[in-house]
Image 1 (cartoon, rainbow, N blue to C red):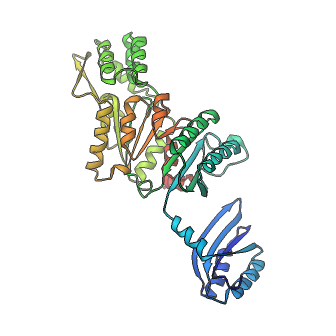
Image 2 (image 1 turned 30 degrees about the vertical axis):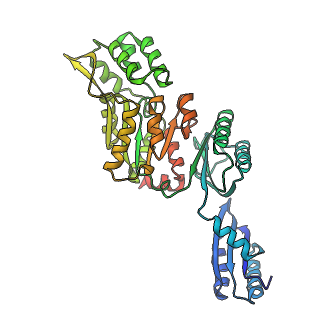
Image 3 (image 1 turned 135 degrees about the vertical axis):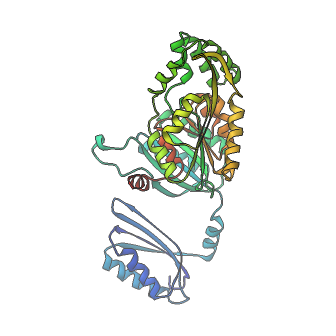
Length: 409
């Protein structure tokens, strides 16, 4: 041990003030060079690791002083010599093939975490770090948060990415929780623009179906809407068919609907945080401008693009004005907004539920299928189905401990 130049020290015990300070002061006294350091706290139990390099021939003195200091602090300490070759190989791995896997649900169980860990191991990946993003869990179930989330930082070379994502999708469905898999990069931590679909995303309804019910053609329109969202018929064609069925509807109905829009769970919190951290927020909707403008004004959003209904003498004509905001148009608008805001496309986020959102989700740096149709979930890179829309914050890497305090300020 005394001839070893590189030593890994691992410390565990009760977490209390002064432990890290006391041990690093010993290292400073012997003029050691710290190569890496990491610390975690689980229920006031400290796990601290320090990798350091000693001057040749003084390793024994360093370890002796560390041992005495650990005894004084009442913590357990362990020493492991590290060869130069092993250290060099570890350095070469830094920054290469790093991924973030986020587990999110109403609750998270050992069964879910174990199943995900098995898939990760099967792919030859190693878990470097695990962090809880949601708050600490009280024993009283009635006081618990409506969601639970942990983030895993993993490293290695994937054996079969498609196979892993398929396994995650199946597991997510079987155990009722969401799994996000993202490549770690600077862009993941620097998202700046987010674009939302509106109907069945920001609001828990399809407005065109609401209008159709009042026009007495609810079943016909709902059937066409469902086929369009599943991607079984062209969106633009379905849009024209449904608009024609609304001919003669009084515009007062629109006011009644907008005053009773069912806002999606978690939207207020999500928008508040996104605005706080400086996101530019857009609505890109295949729905209607009347309702999009209401949400834009209510939440003070930056952009809104949707379809405009033609109105003559206070009634819908069955026609529309301008270009249809379909799948292609949504993707184009996402790119345009990124250009206007001078951000890389990899810094953008898109959220939607229907087949007409897939191009937008594919174009964005982070595309999230939210409570989406099966076809959309299968084709999207990320999906969120078990919690409210504020679950997006965890996919972005935010922690409750930092969010909730900021929102109170």
